[in-house]
Image (tube, rainbow, N blue to C red; front, side, top):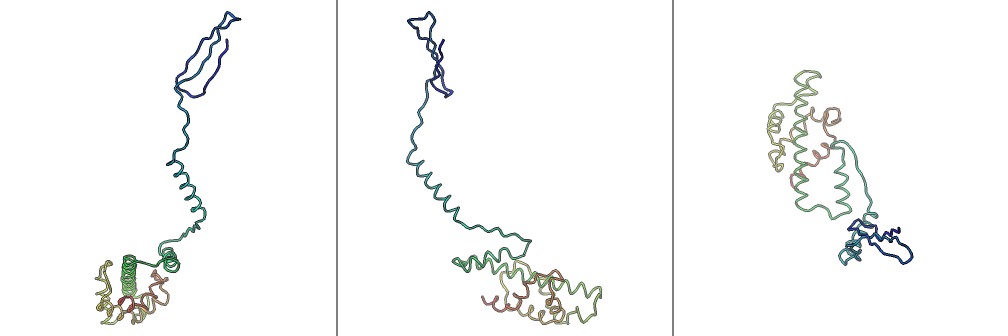
Length: 200
């Protein structure tokens, strides 16, 4: 008995019995039919393959940099600076979004400074002249504390109140070492450029 395997594809199998002249037994041939031949790649498939290879080559040439760090450590600042210096800069929408973030940061930081001053003044942990505000500054502090963090801009009124607070000895003392009081150090830069931020 002879068995001949014609194909290895699991489609429809068949077996042929072939009589022979010299033997009383029959040869049995097993095979498979209904096999679909493998077609050559189509034009679309070849085009997709070329595009995938091209994309892979571009990706291999792309320099990737992973920036890690805690919140407000400067990750976005580095990216934005690279984009500004080596890219096309910011469009109007991105500039407005960045300005809004800066305004929110300024107001929130000044509110934290005021809260810090009031807390120290409340418990008298230091001599009163180190952490206290005069009458005018207390009115400005009350105004700044009432502002929403979603303030669209720093108008002249807000600017005037911020400038009054900045001149206070208590605020100056905190700004000499803001990290000690859990205030972000970059607030010093923005307070130094308040007028430019307002007029931009």
